[in-house]
Length: 92
Image 1 (cartoon, helix red, strand yellow):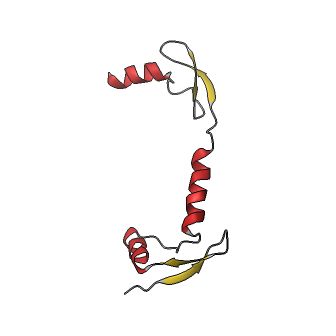
Image 2 (cartoon, helix red, strand yellow; image 1 turned 45 degrees about the vertical axis):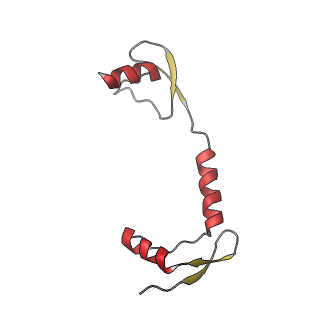
Image 3 (cartoon, one colour; image 1 turned 180 degrees about the vertical axis):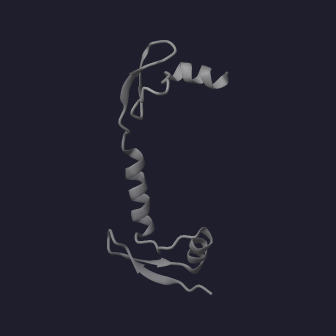
């Protein structure tokens, strides 16, 4: 039903094969678009995304009052806990 297709990577311009098996996998998952990057460029892009440090925000723990940082913008409508108090609160 599916046949191998040769596509061109939009990042490096190299040709790569979109195999029949990959096309079947894409169809099973409901993906609408064909890949636009070769395997090497996809791997490189994922590695660059994962290594970017997340922005941290200073706040105060609602339980013990210790200064802590969190990777999201703290809101005043919910308590923020340091890692120790969060672990204790989670077990309770």
